[in-house]
Length: 514
Image 1 (cartoon, helix red, strand yellow):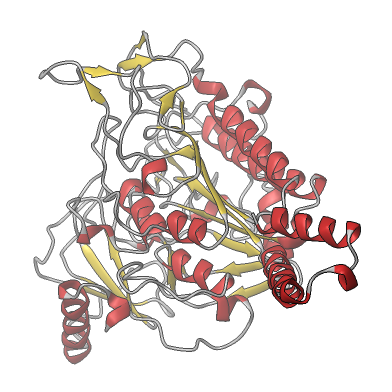
Image 2: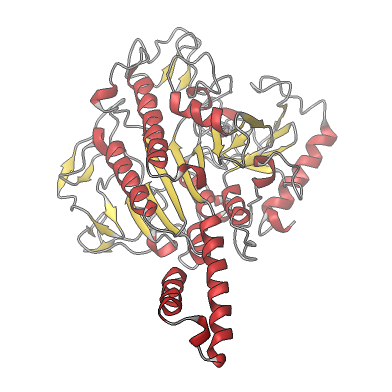
């Protein structure tokens, strides 16, 4: 709007010199022109923001983090080379829905109604439509915001009856992405293995799910349910990437800065790489799928270059949790020998690197994830940060990037990463990070110390244990990243201090207010 007004004023001055403008109008016009010029310049100076969120990519899947990996990831390696790598980055949860809640709201999901597990594809909305989300915040400060990809935060379908899954997909969904602040959305409802399988553009079906998808086993793991005729599993990631590239092309022709949240569908199950990637590795479908994820990142980076957006765009890349692939060190066959197996032998690949456990666990493999950020001219190329961070921090980071204060009633667990991104000390210390497993097991991280408030993984690895059941586990992650030695008995005072820190954060309305 400001550029339109500015153009009109410039036209007036071109047709009627400043000397001919009446005195009573001259000063207001000059003030208006100056203010609008400054506003336009400020808007142009604000960087675009692109957040790419992989689905289930492990810490060891990226060569830049795991030099022993046999999976080529040149585009992710490029991000690491041209930007900053956060080596101690964590998803707030070891599964996807709660992590996505943290990304969009800046708030831990266990403060919501979802205390464990994830929503399915038919789940009702998790985010209160009145809540100030990251998208709504940025849109309120001059950005155009878009989400393209996997939503998995629930929405409300029109009902046709009282029975289970009696939905009218021809009607617009309510309380979806657009209702929580996104100006544009092109999404699938949940993970690629959850029906209903169809694309939704701005709350309406692109094509109705009128067909039936049969149940399939791993690696092409799918649940039975409705599917649209144009929904081809092997083409879903490419299709969503086409939409993201198209969005970047469109926005490159406009002055308004934009925020693109691009949550991918891979390498989550079903592990169905497009045919052009099959056989790219010797690590089975999963290895080939990681190559396709890397190629997707490459397509986004290429688009930013081609559309002259790269120099003024902050690119974040991370994952919603660790890889679902196990590490098999016993006699069981791995994924290379049998592609129906959800695990690797370490001589072939370690999807989660040296970390203990797998997706869903409170152990490090569940939530320590790849995290890269590139901002040309601002973030030093090839740099690294050991700051302990989590995905709830995106909100405060974006707020500081655009130079706006956080709302008092939002982003309750968000702390800006801008200072470490720029190689500077934090203005204020970050509260300890809380991690949460699939079954509701908590861990608290303060400095090098991690305390698990339970007696097992809280996820998939045995023993699963139970939340708040003794013995608790304490690890010195500087000395024991693989979490092999529980030192809780040797440090009772430290355990007690961490328990009190956790209780204070858990009982609070938000860790940012402490």
